[in-house]
Image (cartoon, rainbow, N blue to C red; front, side, top):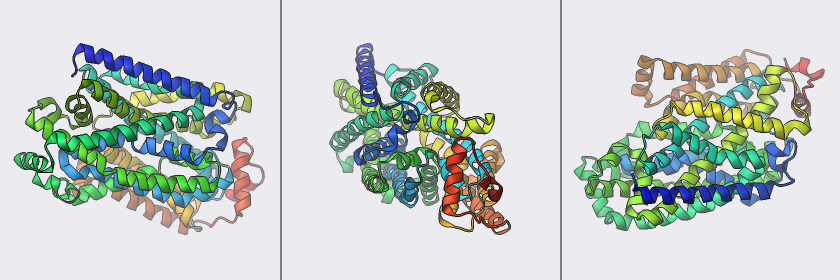
Length: 508
């Protein structure tokens, strides 16, 4: 907790930062966010904007808070999250060719893979909206913890969560997707500069690697300084975390939006390749910050921090670097969570209007009404995500358990549709439903959860295997799709307008 003067200093700085983001969002989107463009930014984004928005999202809540907390607890294991994220982003290169189809949601992409079937699109649309609510809840929770630390409030404080929601909602509300990518670009630069500076300062402040090693040995956790901290964290637990993060990337619609809105297929390809490499290189940063924070906190007997590792980053920047410089870089950390949240918010809105609304009402939204309905949908999405934050606690635990249990079925469905031509819509639905059922059982039945944790250290691996087996069996037991690629594309684009025509009969 900071003293009153420093709290005031931070709040003023944070307010100025939000005002800057609002101005940037307004100026960059002015005259370019009418109709569908509010959700897609005109589908003409440059390499830099796509690269920056991917980087800002991935070096977000998971890295700044979750991975740093893992580094605090388990040393070099803090880099594991970044490995899963990097390989997930690099694997998105398999899906980049879909850019030429002019789709705007992951549900449309899934419909194309599975014979143009309307049911796949409807189910996937609802699931994708739920996924975005899950991720938004995680980002809001992370941002709220930054504020809670600064203001000396409880980590689950509702007021801190409300401030976080309002902070990134305002400029999304004003400028739509273009506001998101331009503010992400600024936030990405702040994040990189802030984290790199802290990393270079962290080790000397902790007294060097020998002092860090001694601190972990004194705590009976010498294995934290070994290869990726596996001796401390556990090999199976590390594999599960990588798998959870990886499948979370593949099963999250936000990253598909970067493909659909890139200027060209080549632009998307370069952006994802560059982002994946950058994230992999960045993965060591949270470990270094976390380990240094643990050493400094141990030497200073900072009991509060030692009990709550999610405060590792905030402790490092405000205590070790001093209040003035620390508060500046604390905004960088909070910026990381906001840049993750705004992208998921706009993706959630797109899915709600393009897929969920037509599914539930049988109607489509007129081009001229997109901006108005988008803003209404944004409020609905944020309210639902805020409710989800009431159950979100530990960031990495949230990713490992909630994301790891509910997203593998969706990710397998997309992989199978993209890579296996014999996959049928029945098999795709089988992937989704079996994966989600496993996740619900895992989250809702304590003995089942305990058994899965004992055998696999988390739900991601068994959920993936189950979804894959069910998807393959159902695909082999049902008729193969006979529609051509052009026919499937037509069905998707016509379906966006609420018209499926005669081709729908062949997709059943």
